[in-house]
Amino acid sequence: MCGLTELVSSCLAKTRSAPSGPSSHLCSINDGLPSASSSQNSKDPQPFLHASLFTGVPSTIKFYTKGTKVTKPNKKISSRLTWCYNSLLPIVMRHSLAVSHFTVVDESLFYVGYCGRHLKSAQYKSLHPYQKVNHYPGAFHIGRKDRLWMHIKRQIDRFGEEEYNIIPTTYILPDEREELLEYIRADPKNHVIMKPPASARGTGISVTRKMKEIPTKGQLQQTKTQMIAQHYVSRPLTINSAKFDLRFYVYVPSLEPLRIYIYEEGLVRFASVPYSKNLSTVSNKYMHLTNYSINKLAEKDGVSESPVPKWTLSYLAKYFENEGIDWPSIRDRIEDTIVKAFIAFICHELFGVDILLDEDLKPWLLEVNISPSLHSGTPLDVSVKAPLAKDVLNMAGIYVPPR
Image 1 (cartoon, one colour):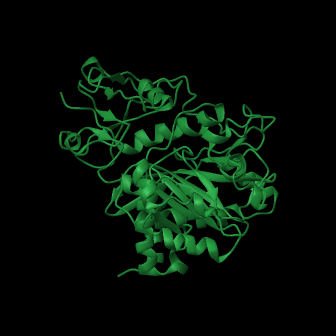
Image 2 (cartoon, helix red, strand yellow):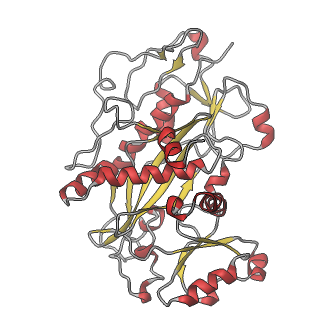
Image 3 (cartoon, helix red, strand yellow):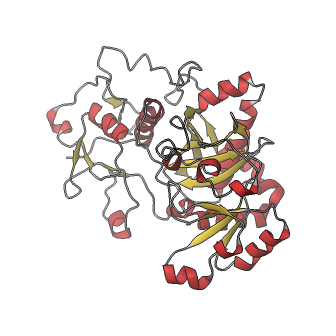
């Protein structure tokens, strides 16, 4: 029986070892945007199919980013290249689909692929072998903050805190309310961050240590809401005095053997207001929360004179290099954290993993998003998410559908 360290090492598939591969999008320190692939800028049409390396295995459809010319298949094939419409289908993925001659159609019609909300059990049962969907049954467990803690706590009990200390201690309310209050009473500096377990984009999040703000069982039942409380990391690493977190994109295509791909590029998301440890500031969401959906409103609300910045991970790597900080070592520890999180689950799809670095450069797992936003409001977003969407479609291995 292999130990956890060996298991982590065997499960991690790094894309960095192949700089010429599809996931290698490097960022210039001057503009923060990755350079375009020379093959995709070619005026010659790119192949529609990717030949299999194995005998008897059919070719898969190749996908590219917007602006690439792709050889058009014959009419019999192109008429079957359909993708299910839903409101969550991101623009960057639509562009990749369109380049490879797919048409987006209503869900009542024949379709090859689907990218949207978690399906219901009956919908999974009706899928055909040639169809691809972006969520597997039960994968929402890792996206719920309460279930995430329950699974990781089980691993802590099994392997010990020294090996699995990857996420701040979490309390599931109302069952663990007394333990939470005991933690708050123990030290005036102890704060917690309150979160609804299934929310996204910063909805319902607050930082507190006030007893009256910890909901009781009756209050939760009355409002029909759920809540978790998590130890607040009070010594975060800052850049230009601002708190930040890191968004990694993780693709899990295989369970046995467990195979995990961590996208080379990602996002660095900043708070709008310089960070302060003063206890009177804990209610300032623009200081203590890094969710972009919150901080993009800071300028409009008059708390910031300019739009909140956003970096790519490769830009951050250059910044750390200039500051004498060992980014490759940090990234290795982050990847170790990500792999340990997924070992605790059974899952298969694209995830968004949010990481916070503290002043000791220790990575803390904040949450896992089962539907990471691929919507792109800025050129920097497009530079990261368009190649990501293309790579996800390629790694899914989509076949030409049968007649």
